[in-house]
Length: 383
Image (cartoon, rainbow, N blue to C red; front, side, top):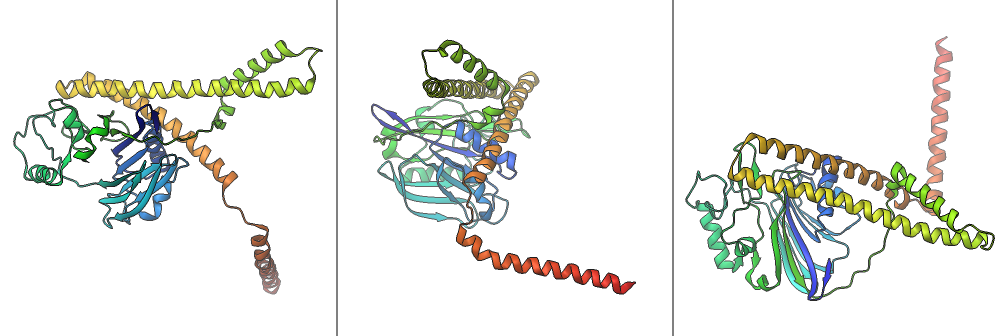
């Protein structure tokens, strides 16, 4: 959610994440989604059973809609951030895990959000512009049907509308060593005036790249509260920074004219500001490094799609490995934070609940005691 002079900017992202099973995998994916600052997220191929969708319940997710499919195949989800003004009216979920449709109001505007995963055998709408290889020049039957549907439903592909002759891709096939543009937004043509930007992001953590759509809506204020990243407490450079700042503060301000109470209170305010400054700097540095890697991968993808060579592919693989490592470290940090959050804020039994379970506890204790006595008696009888 970004406030501007002309209104509120909502960033919508669509990504075929190629499976969210595994603790590290889904944390890497969702961490990258969070880093991209998407407000509304469309995820395809989650590969999550309906009962396993709790992995998508992150602290920053306000609304979660997931297809009701009970196999580790397909699966689609729509995630909406907590600070986004969205009111849900209804939702329709495909029992086969191929689509989910949500109706409601986004920033006061009536919308229909449809996330569709439809395997189309690498179908593209324009063989000349949407493929890196020229193996197929004619439209397939599926492509013709999709084009007819777009015309009849008054829908538009916003990226192609903004880039009528540009070559850019959303999917890389390692098997065929080629790129295609098969992931896209389709929006009502009435929304064209509020489309600010649409672009494809780097292909990382999956063989599909995210596509982001920026829409302008009326303003909605969203207050933010700073919260310290507790993982800094185990960071040696952060400890050294705190030690140096404390030493500097007391060396500068500790004098007979200042009371200890005043010195202590002022120190807390000073350190609070220094911690915020350090935290913001470190977070921005890590974010910049990941963005830089993503941009380098994006450029190499463009080079490789035009002129494939082993050196470019090796360089791209090295950069993606580095990006994966950074994402893994961030995922581990998020897992640690999640454990702490559940420990501090998880549901705990009330005094009434504990009292209600006391009789059962003592009954089980007596049963265990009787079982021990019976085992001892059987041992004595054996002799």
